[in-house]
Image (tube, rainbow, N blue to C red; front, side):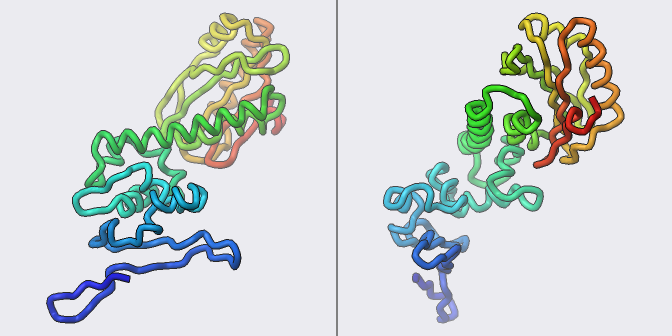
Length: 266
C-alpha cells in the first residue's frame, strides 16, 4: 500500500484495496479502487488490468477493468481504470454499467474529460459489437422463428436500448426461416410512422410467405397502445388480400415483451 505525505506532516492512504466477490477456493482476485491522484504505476503490476488479463485471462476482470484494457490509456488526470469507472457511471441510475453503453451517443461519452473522438467511437463500437454478437448467437440457436421467444431473443438486446421507436418487418419463408429483416420506419420517442403498403411491397419483392412485425417502446413498457392494435389489424387485413400472413406482432420493452399472438390479440 502506498502512502503520501501531506503538507501538514500527516500521512494519508493513496490506495484502497478491496477484496470483492471472494469465495473460498474461487477468488476473483483483487480489485483496486483508486482515488483521483493514483496513477496506474502505483498499482502492483500483477493487479493492473492488462497484466492481470495476460496472467489469468479476461474472465477474471471486472467490468471496469475490461473497459480499461480496451481504452488502453487514460487522460492527463485520470488513469485508464479511473476513466473506465467514470464511463460506467454515465449509465447510472437507469442502467447497470455495461448494459447502458448501448444507449449512449458519442456526445454523451465526450462529456467526460479525456474522451475525444477516438475513445468515444471505440466505446460506441463496443456497444454495437455486443448487440451484433447477441443477434448472431440468437440466429445460430434459432434457425426458424416459430414462437415469440425466439423472436425476442433475436431482437431484445438491440431494441430495448433504442431511444426512438423502430419498426422491423421479419420476412419469412415457408419454414418460418428468416429471409431478411427490414427497418420499415424509425419514429419519434412515442411513435413510428409506417403504412401496410410499405411492408407488403418489400414482402412481395422478397417472395415472403409470412411476416412478423417487431417494434420497441422506448419507455420500457411493452404494453401495446391503441395505435399499435389498430395498425396490427390493418396489416393483418392487408396481408389477407395478398396471401401473406401476419404471424405475430411483438412489442419489445426493457427486458419484457408482448406478443399479439400469445395474448390472443391476433
